[in-house]
Length: 310
Image 1: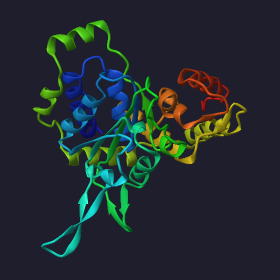
Image 2: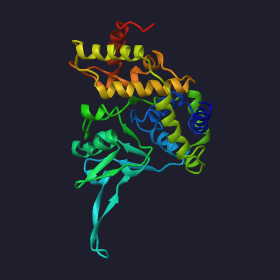
Image 3: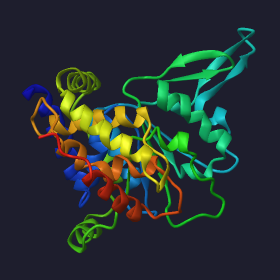
Image 4: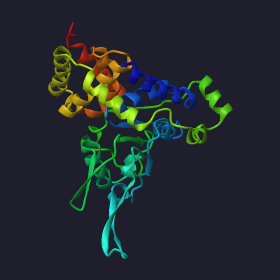
């Protein structure tokens, strides 16, 4: 285990060097990445969403791609398309940005539903199908999508099926006065990140992901505890659509990563409870329109009604 914990430590040290006051967001992003999931960040502009995505790619020496979503963005702008090669007399597939390891989908809710749907297969199956031919995506494959919480004009809310493919939904929030002072003194860190060298390589990252998946154990007691919570969300009078099986699987994966980050090879209830505000609310469809804070409050009461497995 120590070999793989050193990989995590190197990456976290890299982040702390360039991203001030983002420790919580960094931890959540790392948990999502090593859980083989995808991350949705909803926040105001200019708080470091893009810098976080670039830092993840740079720390690991993997490919980084960015899509700036607009209402005229086409599905093929994401997946790629077949282009006729006159010299060869045949069509050739030109890969789109989705074939990068780390993909930043900026302002995802500005893309039309048709374009948003181009991400569904990629996020769920790690592959894309273009004109009947399926292409496997590179490993690791991690989508960080952003949307601005304060804007609604010209946006298309993400459908339930899309939201369910994000393991976590988080906000970076404003930095503290002290951290913001350090940022102002040092200027933007993005240039420094671009000039930096990776601290781990892709093979180390993939080995660590595989180690967590294979070696961190989840007891039947923990699984039954999670299933009780999942069942409560499906039976609750306030909730129209509860947690899916996909959601439960992703919560288990986050719990495994959480345990590993704490140097454990087994999951405890806290590995679920510490992260439910980020893994559950965006997946629930409430009968009444509620803010994210109200959703978390409702979830807290629901979870409290489930007996802990010890």
